[in-house]
Length: 585
Image (cartoon, rainbow, N blue to C red; front, side):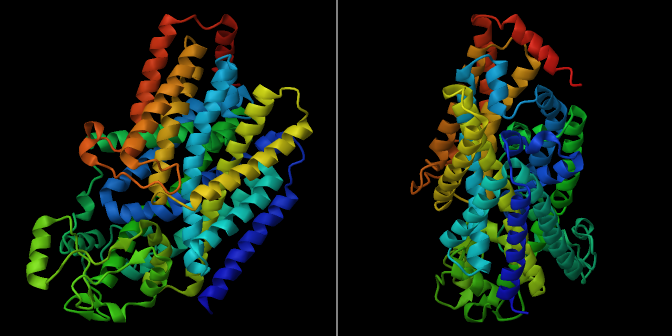
């Protein structure tokens, strides 16, 4: 059956399901809009949390990072999953015991300050807006290729779908929609991996296929190492992302960023009891593990298929190089999107995809092949998962399914982030600070208007994404790690941290992280602003901008503790409130 027809059919049915659920689960009051009424079963909530968490960065971009960074990309696996352990042990039960709607509300009451609540809202918006840009990039990539629309049109369609089910249903509609989205995305991801693992190794379990032998008796990872080393690239199984300190700080930033993300924390307000909050974290980790243990296999197998097809495939090759005029159809399809680009630098008609950063190899390739630089001038990492079934010549229904899964992942997280932003504006700023006497009906309307405004802003920023989805998301985690996570930890476990300390700590952590990112990444929040480049030589102790959130967190803690020692002590009634939160019943 025609690929486009199948894609439209499967994606269309999934969108109809999301909208139908939103109509069925329409929020009628603020409790349903913000926390789904507080009566979601922990298994269902765990599934919804997993979908909320496994964004376009996890579904679309993470395997691409693993494909091109090998072992070094393990920081994403360890950081993003390890953060859930922190969340389950240190934050989720205490936040549920507090029993309010939002993270800024907790910070405002714990630090007895409207200013603290406003600062927390600002931190939340910075982190969430940065995060949602990555989701918009994923939506645009999926639509632009498989629905044969422009990136911009795909983005607008995705915005429209989110607007309908998020604004209409609030957290109640989003929760049940995310359950459906989890089922779709996990089936799509694992089904593709099973097909490709069977194709390459004969093993239907991708996690085992990664360590299995291929038809010629060579182990898959050994084969991949051989293929890419022959092309001048670093050995796949020993590749790293910077020095050891950077790997450690990157992992730490992702872990504490996970534990500090408001759109994840807010999910623990939707269950009836503290025990259910702990159970939610456990179920969510289990559901997430299905994809996260599969991702290394998907990344490695995709990289092997990509290199074999472009560089060492048998069909349409000449002296080991693919002849451009005989390139496969999948290559032509992705060229149309602009996410895959070839430039024939030596006019020989062959695609020479070598590592031009390896000076020794480059000199040899120039002398022996007349090579004038890497001719694959763009291979966007975010295409790897979506292009993988096409490269492997899988059935069209599998290709269509992976598109629906990618869109489900991006839409589910985008909805959760937008709700967090909307609740911060309507509940924390309007009702919590500026208009405390507004009615529940007015607050519900304000929440929906804020959601619509947040979708518009996110779409505008998504039209000018700063880079690949997982890289943008990593910065969002750094912002949450440097500002929100320390405030929550000190609010729960350190009774002597007062309002002045919390406010100065959040401002210091967020500011130093933003300045570092701006210095090395450019003003990525402003569309059209060019990157200044990573400028690795100027990194502080070799720590990359994506990993700097952990440094910001250390600054936050240090400033808050210092300020608390030279300012007025925390009032006794606040200390009693902390004691009450610390005994989750």
